[in-house]
Image: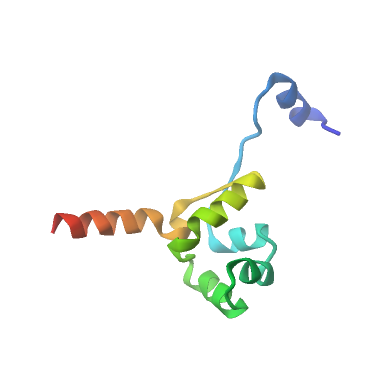
Length: 96
């Protein structure tokens, strides 16, 4: 049952502001933890732990993980997947 601000937003047709996940640990936690993410990504738990330690997830996972996070009501900072950095590097390489 909706109450308070959630009810008011529903009645007014306004969406709740989405929380933006800004680091790998937040992404992994929201997606169910290290084991769940490893199973979803078909990688080892050690690989996921390495992502957490390095502070970024390989860019190849951006589309699938960001779609799942959006379905759960979250947005994710592209920096978690090094998206902005890669675009900048690609532009620099193309200009060279």
